[in-house]
Amino acid sequence: MCGIVGYTGLDAVEPILLQGLEKLEYRGYDSAGVGLLRGNSIEVTRASGKLSNLASKFENENSEPGTGIGHTRWATHGAPTSENAHPHQDPSGRVAIVHNGIVENWKELRAKFATGEFSSDTDSEVLAHMIAALLAQGESLVSAVRRTLNEAAGAFSLVILDSSQPDVLIAARKGNAGGLVVGLADDGTYVASDMSALLTYTRKFFFLEPGEIATLKPSSVTIYSEEGREVTRQPYQATHDLTEVGKGQYPHYMMKEIYEQSDVLVSSLQGRYNGLSNTIDLSTEFEGSAISKDRIQGITRCLLVGMGTSMHACMVGRHYLERFGGIPTEVDNAAEFRYRRPLLDSNTLVISVTQSGETVDTLAAMDEAKRADCLQITICNTPGAQSTRLADLSLLLGAGAEISVASTKTLLASIMALHAVSLFLGKARETLTSEIEAEQVVNALQLPSAVSTVLGNSEKLFEVARKYAASEHFLFLGRGLGYPVALEGALKLKEVSYIHAEGYSAGEMKHGPIALVNDAMPTVAVCTRGDVHEKMLSNVEQIKARGGRVISLVTDGDDSFDKLADDCITLPDVDPALGPIPSIVALQLLAYGIARERGLDIDQPRNLAKTVTVE
Ligand code: AGP
Image (cartoon, rainbow, N blue to C red; front, side, top):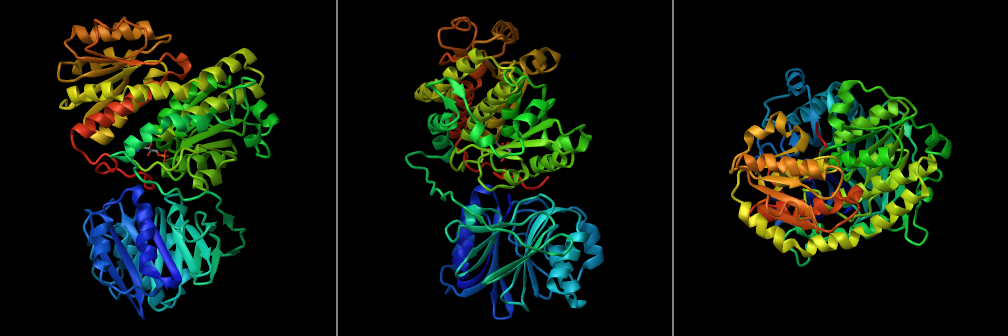
């Protein structure tokens, strides 16, 4: 979603802003803009569409040192036009702002603080009017921003330029809608939505917490708490590199990331699964965290929270936490969790799964858990992200940057992290036998090669994709561990191909969805080896009896669907507990293949954002 970059210092500002915005493109956006301080006025340049449209407006410009702000906008209020793109200014042009998040009471604020006509349909523009109005009343810039944060309802990040203070940038956060990170370097001071925009320039960072306001000058930063006190904080020293990710030989990032999954599994297993002793060990990761052995013994229940694909990882993880961890476990859609007044206590373990670590709903659920003093683990792919700062313990995925908006490799890594943590907790709570531990470790270590086999069979999946690419509706069915796989298959297909796809528990089918079945709505059925194999067989029979077409995912060596299904996709025989791994890879390839047949913008599907920072 929206991306923010700001700089004040001795280097040419406009290339820093444009390069920073380029690094934030992965978040998803539909227009972009920059505001530069030139003398005592602010020059705003904006463009709809891709960043290149904005960059082309600077082609013949001389870059100068100074102060500026940049923004990529993911439209919420108002169409993705250049008028609605940020920065927004007050009518006098004194103040310019870039904003990420939503101002919920923008209409009331417009009535109360308008300093003239509004030139956009956005909720954001009123913030520039408010700050300018308060400055005109003699308030200082920091206190004008503080009052603006107090009056504006919602959660957001904001960076502000005031033309009468050319060497100053103000950065502010309210709630948990998109982070802000301040970077310090010899040449100047930076601010951005996340570290990836700034790693080229510095490794020394301060994260702003909700409610905080920072004053950035070329050689200093001052942070104020919500109450207005100056905050002293040790800088965070980033140790990870900005991986320069390219597509390599692949036509799309999604394909590249699907094909990386065998390697991603190897890194997920390394250091946690010991193939010599056939044991699991996460003690170094747990060591020194609030989740001590005593606290582990006292856990009475576990809640898994996440959104979208990460929630599907949670649904797989629930099976592991109950079966191997011996802990009663529920899964919650993070966006619903906070609004249903959940009953929580300090013996509840909350595990959040979020590849970005910045998803607003997941962070809000974590805040709720924090208020109830729950133990918290976050499973995240982004070092330093907000979720890692909220949790007692972070299990980093180490899957490398995932650029495609559709998540693929981080799902597999999240599932393996949940598998590992379940085994570790079961062992620590003495509910897991060493035989089951050893069996799971041995079976998990076979997954990289199983995934290679699925990838090696991708032509078969692309053939099926070609056959069904014209269908406008799809049904995905699975049971047990196959249920979250079905949900994920449907989500992936609709995201990248814009085909209407429904994921259901196969047991639910007769309670309504079967009414949809006809030869124009193919069903993808997850029928791999496991407890529910026979049940899936009869569900497929029921679909065939009603004229439906079926694509079955089956385990190598199983011929029971040969005469029944229209197409069978054969997957390597893995332990049924780990069955989601090869099945998910197959469904990713199917979705990718169909989207490719349809000639769509696979890596940046319409309307979607990689990092969802608004509710
Ligand atoms: C996945 O393909 C989606 N783009 C989306 O559902 C995603 O998984 C969700 O927004 C959660 O993101 P997170 O893992 O960064 O929290």
